[in-house]
Length: 248
Figure (spheres, rainbow, N blue to C red):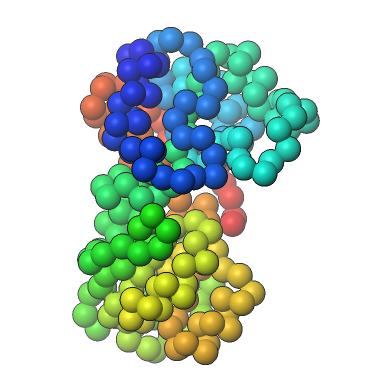
């Protein structure tokens, strides 16, 4: 398929114009016109780009791309190497950040709900990016933490009594610890995110709402993977998800 056709479809699907984001969404680096092979991953690191070159990919599809607000805009060092790899091999870089967190079917939060059988009931946070809902009956915090560890293959950081029942839950992938107070306002027993800050521990202890930090990378693998699978099914292009190991 044509690159322009692919980007137009993704923009229509993910609707980046609805979001006030910290980076440009959509096509970030222009490569060759025809796209037959796509490599997808969480972050456009050099390791992912090298894997894409080895796969002879025409485009790289990621959640974390480039050109973040506040970054040094000079093309030197690591940035020169990454951009040089893309340009030298005529690979497009396509990135969707908040739109891929929030998508109701393919997004990171939707995929977490699907994986753990959480029942969504509503949204909160900036641009309604975070979710809240219910878990199954007779669920304990310790059991849920073990399920997260087994599924995500990461040991989560858990703040709360393992024996406490969990009925209502809120979640948001990645670095969304800043939404914890809004999650508490939803009347939940537990908030799950990717990261945790020093003050988050005190807030969890003093509010009585449990907190699980399941890993930024670990909670954001599944949106871009689902998107790649969707593109393969929709257009018949080759879409390979490459998980570059990251303990965060």
